[in-house]
Image 1: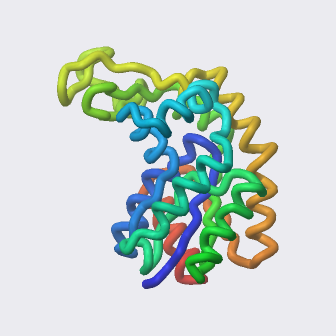
Image 2: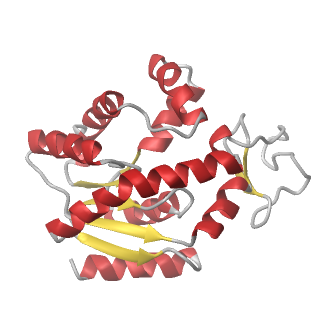
Amino acid sequence: MRMRIVLMGPPGVGKGTQARKLTQRLRVPHVSTGDMLREAIHGGTALGRRVRPYLDQGRLVPDELMEEMIAERLSKDDARAGFVLDGFPRTLEQLATLDRVLGRLGVTVDRAFVLSVPEAELVRRLSGRRVCPECGALFHLDSRAPTAAGVCDACGSALVQRPDDDENVVRHRLEIYAAQTLPVIQAYRERGIHHEVDGAGEMDEVFERILRGLRDA
């Protein structure tokens, strides 16, 4: 199935998990702007140094940097048959950026899925996350705690909390989402490609809801 999908929702709603499941089902690449930015930071690239202050403070990365990164990724051969775009667009300006990038490629978004979860659950999910700075393994203090407190099961390194997972930063990120991303959702609704998905429950249950939305597309 040739599909170009935008997967949206607030931080912590589970976009990354569902995007990976979708890409396996559709055999198209998972294009995660968050992952791309974190890889740039971890690798110490020029882009990473420019965007790190924004991510550490829970702020949006400037559109010109995002456009450059998105255009390069979506022009690659593996994205010709489709993609699942996770984390972009987040503002109306970014929506216009994506439209320009896709317009140059001669394609459009086929479906915009919007995952939703109550705010209290989002704060719990994000503020409880811990990551291994060495191997990248992810843990959660409630649902996936490491065997030894504060220590990575995979490599034994000390786990850390990402700066953008601090509770105060999380709440600020959710405020930004409400103010800037909800208008993007409305724009996709007006285009007739928006599909709302309940993001609560087991990940397979959520995935089945997304698949129902695909079948209705």
